[in-house]
Length: 228
Image (cartoon, rainbow, N blue to C red):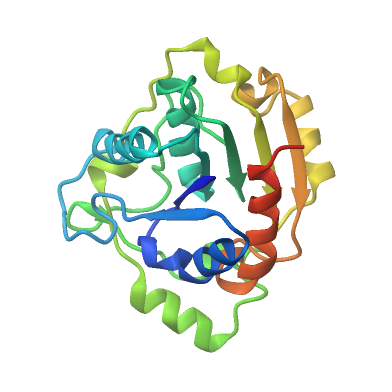
């Protein structure tokens, strides 16, 4: 199966290199995406531009793909299910939840010169970054791409209720499946509360398992690709 890999904020497609290698060895066709404004040199990209890139990859897949979103990009993966419910086999959400209709995509941190740079490790101290050593943190900071304001402040638009019938796998890194399920069951994640099939997968990592547990993450995604 084609497995589309969408990184979260500040991440270029190369962040998936180790996961992609492991998925290839497991017999799948990984497609890491470099999003507009996150690795392609664009500074004026918008959320619509990123959605268009994801949809183009969905449309180009020879069969229905698994669409994987990480962190904020869980919303991009869910938007693919909304715009192409008949073309997306499953959605895997790693370390995040999809935003609801009308919410900002990722208006989390201060903008500097029209973009949202990586804010440093302060907001991520604790379980998020506990498995990143000093060298890994330096490498992350050096590679981090400021996210254009048009992406961060973009407004999420969801229109097709058929998205709720696309199967979802929640991969839980810095929190447990039980904690994630509690949030969904309580209605704190409105989009997933209405989804008809949500499964949970645990991974013992911080917020960036593609960097610290790539083989384990690849195995979980391969399992998600083949269904329950």
